[in-house]
Image (cartoon, rainbow, N blue to C red; front, side, top):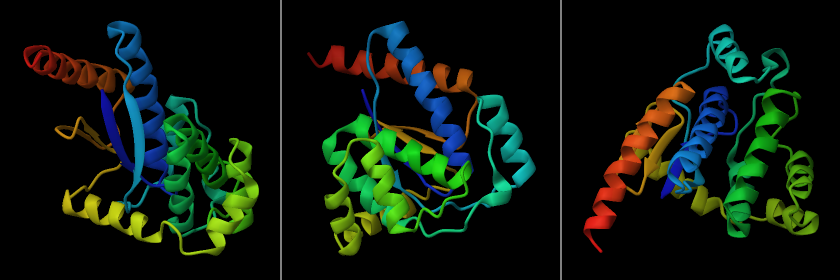
Length: 198
């Protein structure tokens, strides 16, 4: 099964939700033997995170947010880099996304700074010079704009927003258990359809 996850680098709710979703996806694979392949797309956060609320939710998930040191940032360049990273495979894009979340939400780094972005790209095995060149150009800017337009056209209001097999959706942060149950229901419906079509 494949899923697209609309989220944002600067949105702590996206970070918390995606961590829970990824753990739930791993649980689903253990239960069913079916991997859930996740890819990530840019969306603009529609609600401001209330620091205390999101920090508490993060702590339950095992994430210690450092909200006091967060540097406000435009995530466009981060998403240009993430769109490029996706060409190297889902796991590379995922690892870079997590690096950027850590940089922004835990370490107080500026994720609109090309040096911060290129360094994080290198940490996940991407070529530093290529990353530098990309960030100095306009490459992937249109793709990121299209991702955000797609999110807007889907009237996404809560992040993360998950679309499984272009049909089933999960909106907003859920508990890990709720994600597991929702993914399992989706898997059952998807498996029934694909088995019926053989």
